[in-house]
Length: 527
Image (cartoon, rainbow, N blue to C red):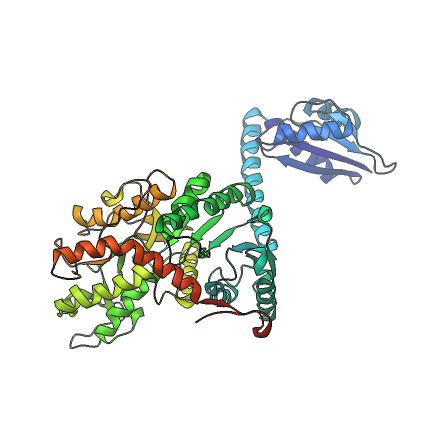
């Protein structure tokens, strides 16, 4: 039996002509067999070089044809290129090809398209075979314990997508990680292919598709806010280097938590510049707090409130924009179908509550991170990931911390929470929204802390110069800021004390997180 191997560049017209002749011979001759190999034009030369070196052949053009010696074994016998194959067919089988040049070019283009489609199909099959590699940093944190059940439920990536979870943390936390790993295995989730732990820094983020960055612990030895800010740089620099080195080029990095979220995100972008667009900060936690406060006032459910926009520093100086906020299924004299909504600002007539109690409560929560515990952090991260992979609800506004490119007058180069939508596996800033202009005074208040945090962290500025901190509410184009007191001197005193109060809470909050291991099955809980 004669078996020939025909290999060539996918868009080669001579390969197309030789292929048609080989198909004819195989169809009409019982002992003639042909095996065809096509390679993408970008990799053809490298592939041909490797084949020739392996078999000690000399051939430089497309196609290349050789004969497999099935009856004797050993390496193949090189026949040559298109001309040699044509001569061989005419001499041994008295068959030749009469294909025109025009038809050769048409078939060559079809071959290339078919080859590309086949490659895409193979990649899709590999994705089904190879699970999604999901890395979680600071995996002993309470938020991770609450995040795991959501990830393993199939709600985030879909029931058809298998995942491998890698828990990454310090060597000292290895006992807790092993206990958590065993609990995940006990879930017997159909979407979890494997669970593993990693405590070796050099192996972090290897082949990662998704990286979830949780809050890292803060050393109690740090005495100032400036020390806290600068301490973020080494870890983010290390993470950035490892992401660039070990993770896939298409890796998606999502930063959550309640301390310095914007700063950590912009530092990761600085040290992993090739994936800047794929690094985002979660703002849905603050958005959820605002919706819950509004729902309590309106005596409805938080899920019925949509399009609340969070601007600015996710874990610090920000404001809640209700100008686009709507409430659905609201019980009142006016009732409509499920898609009917009413503006939130038209339903809350208590301006005193909006300008004082609502603002001051949210300011306290976002400035200190209170109530932003493991459950809220986990749900916010999981929901953002779900939107990233499957798209956000059509027409709905989502708040997200992304790198500013000058949209809405925001200074470039800082991570800023702003309105976006998720679609087709990516996100897009909603720059076409109407009537959401931000006043210069409010913009300065929100951007100052972000710029100062970045400058202090990178060592460009020694001391952090804080402005009045808070969550601000804007009802119209006129900014209404909830005052702490009517005394201007008291305002200034509060501004000067802001950075000390924020730092002291961070340390206090770290002391509240208690890790239980042996006698509590390695579970991590927060008191």
